[in-house]
Image 1 (cartoon, helix red, strand yellow):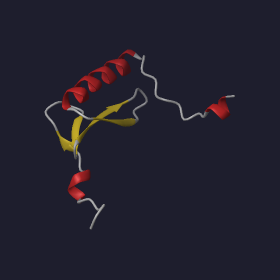
Image 2 (tube, rainbow, N blue to C red):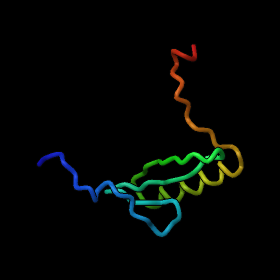
Image 3 (cartoon, rainbow, N blue to C red):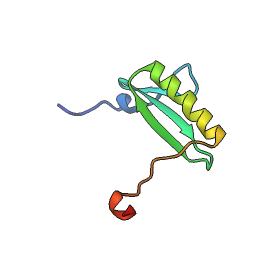
Image 4 (cartoon, helix red, strand yellow):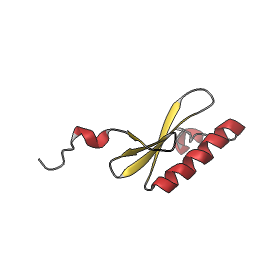
Length: 77
């Protein structure tokens, strides 16, 4: 049974801060961009998650948030 996870380990568990969830030993920050797409980012601690959520939410609201491009360097050059 090595390497198999229980289904409960992959569930997102709500935390006190909005947009911050716990999954296993990591925290997941959930946010939406201006076009309404939902994105998730993982961090190790609850404090990091709260800070990241605040930064992402404010940058999306200000219009300064940029998602990482899927464009490879080869396609760019």
